[in-house]
Image: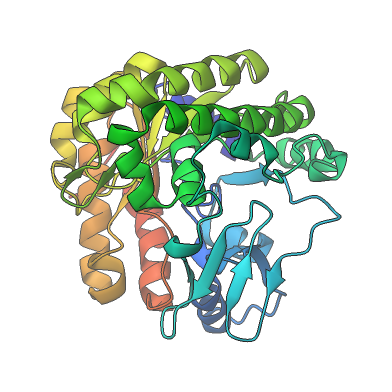
Amino acid sequence: MNSRERLVTSLNHREPDRIPIDLGGTPTSTISVSALEDLKSYLAIRSETRMMSPVFMTAYPGDEIIERLCIDVKMVTSKPPASFKLQSNSEGRVIDEWGIVYQKHETAQTHFIVESEAPLHHVSEKDEIDRYPWPDPTDPSRVQGLREVAKTYRDQGFGVVANTPLLIMTQTQWMRGLEQFMIDTVLNPNLLEYMMDYILEIMLEMARHLLEEVGDYADVVVMGDDLSHQGGLTYSPGMYRRLLKPRHKRIVEFLKAHAKNAKILYHSCGAVEPLILDLIDLGVDALNPVQVAAKGMEDTRKLKASYGKDLTFWGGIDTQWALPFGTPEDVRAEVRRRIEDLAAGGGYVIAAVHNIRPEVKPENICTMFKAAIDYGTYPMHTS
């Protein structure tokens, strides 16, 4: 069974030869640049590091790491247009093609959004939204060469993940600023929804061009929005169902039409459990990252029993304690527990909860992926 067959079998809720393993298959299941550099040094790998996100300082793992760690998926994603150059300065300030401003933290190896400079923060009229210098979603350089890349991954036997830009609420929050976005939900709902729909149309056009190139090869397509934080939902279920769910429904229908054979992977950090049934109702097939340290997500055995018939879990290996602070024995125990809870009957892709952070030691990374093989072979013998 090759990697693609393994992934597709599990996504269809059947048991493959072993659990599919992900690192770098999505923008939220990869590794920080510095953690990758440490890992490559530990493994005596001297290949060049390829940056995935210069804003969030993440990297593609690279073919040697993929082979050493038995990774089963590879990602294709659209690019900024060839005419765009990321604006940055020596103080760590970065501006992306949407006009969003990021500032590098003094100690953290990533950038954070500068809320006070959100590009649509002061907009009060719809025509101001119309006049904003939006990215061109039709620029052909965004997807140039991606069909060949996706075909190569398929021919190599990997599961192919098409990462779309469809993060409608998240992108609107970044453009408007989170505080003003929250105010708008109460005081300016018409303006907010106009802004969301404007951004959605741009993103759908970007996704359409991507899937015209790679949709025939995609086994998984990614969408999402962070609906929750560590302690609970960001919005009430009622607000989600009124403001966002209809737009998510449109996205799901669009993806199913443009990547007919692909499963839909939804990303939401945090305590998303109260909305899992809504996601299933939309037609979502898989959930990432399964943030096990968040409220209501700790009991992965219960999650599997409650939702595993309809939903594949993608992630689940704790990045808040086990990976950064645990011993290798702690990491093995974490991997074993999540496999015991989530793997029966298929429907589990093992990965870290979100990206592997800079402080995670190479020994723990290697332990995680070795344990995924040791404990993740069907039939299960995890004791």
